Image (cartoon, rainbow, N blue to C red; front, side):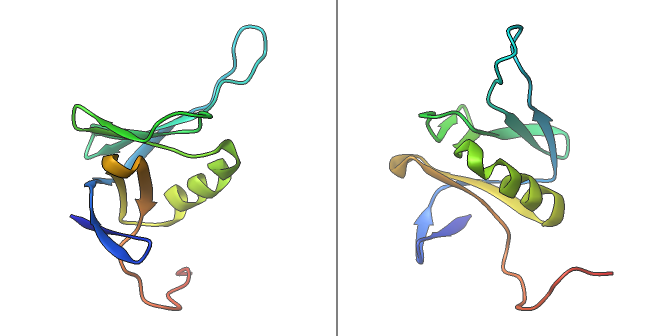
Length: 112
């Protein structure tokens, strides 16, 4: 699948996702451990979204990892809860990734 990045069509590895699991835990001393969101398609793990400072966006044995700053956590959760279909794409040569939808009509809005 070709993804659009910065207005240009770029080649990356893209996986569709349909379910997610959030791990947001703390250590024994009460320090917060950066959350991770594990992503699957029809029950098969395809990748994860991490929120670790300095972590790389990468492809590891056909599994994708996209890293965001922790300040993006609520935005990512909102997208996962409210949009579909969803795709995770990694552009490993650019160390960039994205969580994306397909083209949606302008003004689609939420259905009541």
